[in-house]
Amino acid sequence: MTTIAPNRTYEIHEVAELTGLQTARLRAWERRYEVVRPRRLPNRYRVYTSEQVALLRAFGRLCAAGERIGDLVRESRETVISRAEGRVTDGSPLSQLLDAVRRLDRDGLTALLAGHRARLGTPRFGREIVLPLGEVIGDLWALGKLSIAAEHLASEVVVQQLKLELTAGDAAGPVLLAACLPGERHEWGFLVTLTELRHGGWRVQYLGADLPLKDLADAAWTMVPAVVALSGADPENVLRLLPELRRLPRLLPPGTRVVLGGEGSEENASRLRRAGLKVGAEAMSAAPSPPPARLVHRG
Image (cartoon, rainbow, N blue to C red; front, side, top):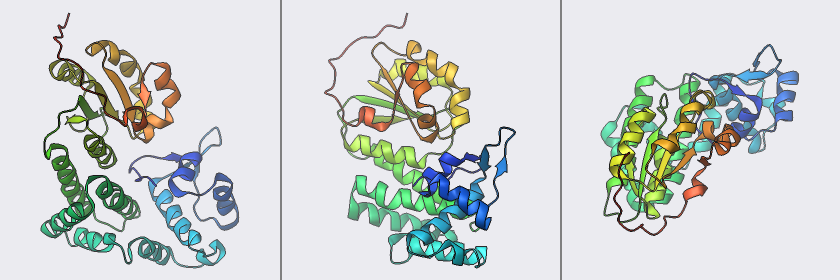
């Protein structure tokens, strides 16, 4: 599953992807049990808040474990959330990590993450530790069960660890220039993908979150990457930036590919592909052989 982004709403097909619940089931739960009551747009489409999505995910986890929704709706919201959290964290490394986050124990969280990194190695660390932790923290934050201070501390520690992964050891492959789109600040999932790409041979140069595309283009003429990788989590933000994204390939050094990832990019995949852009990490999963040295003049 994917981390829920705060301060945005979700359409029903997005909720289905985030919760693993089919749209027909979501509609039935709303009609029969009023598990949540999404807002209706003028066109009658349902839109769900991040809190509602997190609550649906809690119900979904318990139902996937064999419980019945008719029984669960008789329990308090707090009980459902607590039991769903336990279903994810009990007996797993997430329990200790989440405890350190709640205590605002920066040193303890850093040490636990370092231990898991040493035990699992780069790809498994991202997939088995970082992404599940981000999912649980995002759900608890959306439900008001985790303080903003705790969420910020966890993000700072995890992002710092992942950025260290991008600079550890030597890398001799082609350059991959990466950044989050303007207005985008959700780095966890993107950084996990970048660490995997670096492990696969890419020389990743990460410029951070919320980067103006003009500054990205200027940096590309200095670094001359084989690929520019961009992350967009918010579909509306990606759509707003579509005119700039269409122009971006013409502003880059010749032969530079542009690849976009993230939930927002996937939602707008057909538009982006029509603009000549690649979508998804699979478009660049393996690093090509480094090209011969070349001089690039900006005309």
